[in-house]
Image (tube, rainbow, N blue to C red; front, side, top):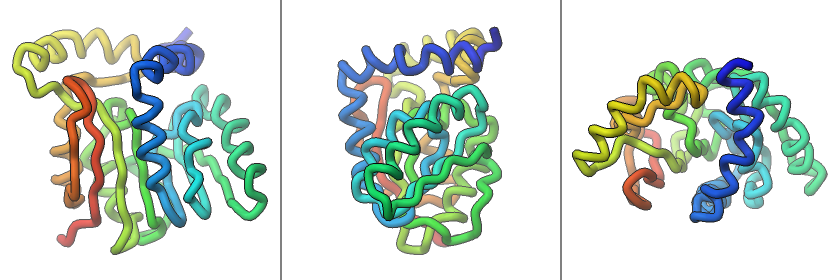
Length: 204
């Protein structure tokens, strides 16, 4: 069994304890802010879909076939909940988003940038597809602020990414957003491991 197949098979089960500790509330908080035409980056198994209550249209990309198979039924629930709402799931990577410039009012990402092969390119792509007045909402787990935790994450990452679908624990994720042309409007560290925030489309 490949690492990605294994992660896809157990992902929902892994999220149960995380959600009980409060991450479901965070994902809900991020997704409920989404408005208008929405793009989700790295939809995974579709756990966020039920929270897009304020979206007019939801488009989601996910590069992993194993995750996509589990997300399809959840996305159909979004469409059936409101017959006027479009819901589309596309196999695509964040580095090559298959939509035109200035396409989306909102882009969201939760626990995604740890696994993206080229996170800077992905940030640039998010900026490209956002409308000038659009917003990017995120909840991610960047490298810890506390030095001893950061050191531990760097030590563990080589093994961790091989067994956890390519997840890097030691990335300074927010720096990729800034370097990719996104202006951080607000950000808060939820605990030692997670941050949530909002970014606007920066001007180059």
